[in-house]
Image 1 (cartoon, one colour):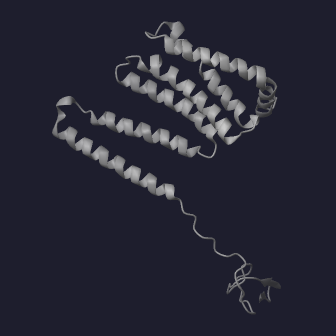
Image 2 (cartoon, rainbow, N blue to C red):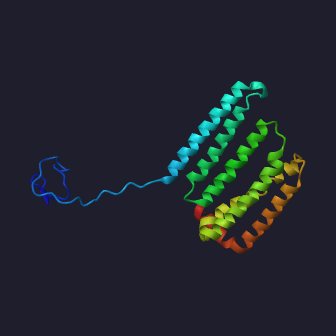
Image 3 (cartoon, rainbow, N blue to C red):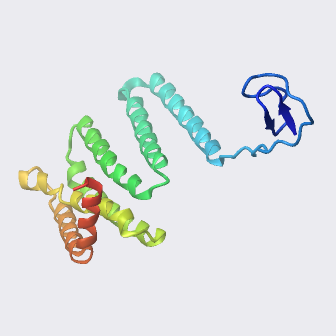
Length: 219
């Protein structure tokens, strides 16, 4: 074992100088007590890079075609916006991949915003509030229920996120009561499903939900 006469300490490993005083050490070195760890491979990074390359190729091809045939307007901008939206959703899901409940909650916030922006930028035909949002929110509620069953989560791990998804199901009532819809059935069904889900949540998990809210808000 190595020894530093100045500091009076024994050193393990194969170092040539004392890490404390940077002085010379004596003795015989031994094997490093901290073996080198193998590099952790991340195979998904290759998939991400290939997807990024394909995205760049698709955008470049569309830009070239649009430049050569500009009669239909600059539709390549919509292609770029669509690809950016797709990458945003993939990034959110990938960012919160270790917590599926958080990933669903983030998607529940990001997707409606993107849909509303797309509808607004394309002349606001109303497809976002008439069809997409009333159908998307129940799908997220089903995704939460499936994640709970598959991952066998504890109530503390999912109650808050499940409540957010259930309450979000009443948002389509706003344009419905405002008279902005020309197709009311999806919004009515979405609100009805959310009302049933909220009733079941309060009846069967009301006490646990109250305890979770108190714990998170420090009341």
